[in-house]
Length: 445
Ligand SMILES: *Cc1c(COP(=O)(O)O)cnc(C)c1O
Image (cartoon, rainbow, N blue to C red; front, side):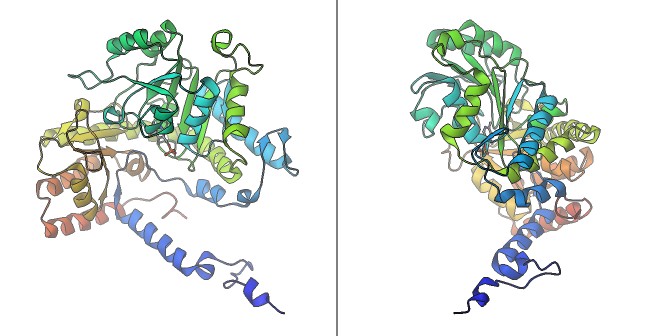
């Protein structure tokens, strides 16, 4: 039977390859629509960004096909000599950028990276301190519905009632009383700089590992726009797709030696670096995503340039300008402002929920996410806050003037949440604003 017709899906392009449009017009059309949406709307989601065309090219490359379980020089599959070079390149670039002794680039994303940190440092049921979600923490820092809250004993620490910033004195008290084995420093909705030196001191006093989760701020750190936790922490985990503008993925940085080896791991023959590696593979993962590691290497090359430094600095300036313009229009911000790339609008005293406002803003082409605020009286499924971030619009080349303009657009929607004509008008203004800028990965190909 001749089944060559079945094999020849779609029409080959001029290179004899089959293009996405020919093979799967349905997915292609969704992609075109998504691109159209992203270049005509304002991406103000603090965790999102635009990866460059070079990063996207590496992500979509034939490195996606390779199996490479293991680490450079010790793989369980043949044919990995080039892949070894590639992974070592990503590792070396990462170590150099952050000044770290050890790096692992295999975690599939930020949450799996954190899972590996738990496995490398703790035993099940050990105590872990983290910031709760309503106060800006991440699911994986000991939240009840996450593995980190079910498999470990969670000890939350919190914010100072007045400043809404981490209450370091209180944190010390709790740590001394509870004796956690790990303390997380980092967050997903915390608009201020972390005091790593203060946290190290506390962790040291109670013999706890200090782990920084820099998922949101890794790009700012590389750009010198936020302090680097690497000199202070035992381990640092991150995503690679947020402010650092790489592919979707994760990485872990650490020291080689464990300062608590004799205390907590005296029966292990592995040092800290080896335990991290073994936690990622073979404990949690199988084959690493080589295409993602290739794209990470590219992103790290980009991040090492002076223009990335300006990008990171401008991101913070833009967030501050947006915050200032919203404050001037009478809005409340969690902590009263920002030191980094994000701000959280506190809408507790407004009639609608954060979710309802985020939906109205989206209709007007302003893409945000609703978020808990400290002391939020509403359900996490609706909340009373909206988180805004500058990384993506800064990647488009926007500056302070545009932030003031954006604050005006946000204000007009939030003021008249039920005026659909007004939303349609804002939608047009947003599209005009976006049309004046390049969108990396979309308009620059
Ligand atoms: C985004 C984020 C993560 C998780 O990353 P995923 O890639 O979504 O799994 C972990 N920690 C913090 C602080 C984050 O902001």
